[in-house]
Length: 184
Length: 127
Image (cartoon, rainbow over all chains, first blue to last red):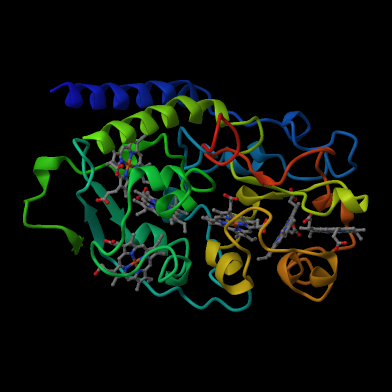
């Protein structure tokens, strides 16, 4: 019982810390970002994040852009190769991961990822392409392994618990784990 | 049971640390300063947000071969002028050429190699 309420509290905390970010959808100017050298002649020529990002599908964390939506709404069309445009191979399953203590299950969507990258980004280096074939845990994700290679560094940050832990525990029959083909 | 407690402590730590770890810089900007400053150039700032609008992740991380760890690719100007790494695009063809030193070497002196924004940038201890 205590275990259950502590986890709830954690989720609440995580949500609460995300709120200030939600309220302010703004971007630091390059010369104030603590990174670019103000005296560098390029500052003033380089594009300001606000100019490029404010017109894309909004989000509350990371770049404050919902990158999945930005592609789906046709706002951007990142190229799949340097020359020509070989389409990236698609694999349209969603994998449910149930080893989440009392939190909602994790749903890994292949489609959203394949709109951004080819299989080789993950297989067989970060993940074996076998259901339940990887010893993933939150600890290791927080250490920057598995999902944590990208999430928390370039893709939306790890404070967004519910975007991965997105399937209510009683919504999935106990018999199902591993890959589930989504309804079209 | 012990393991559960440990995990919970880690998760709590992460929640507390993450919001503070977010620097002012744009999320996912990468500072590369393995050699630049030692050789008299300002640190390099690579903006993910700018490039991902134009290219999928695998163009760089699979086809060109950038490692997914800041500083790990071993980039040098020689390789860039031979058309590797940044030079696969910054060749005056796909993007402006490597003569524009300032565009890449735009960082404040003293910056450390790393990615801005996530679990690997700041905070006490490993996280």
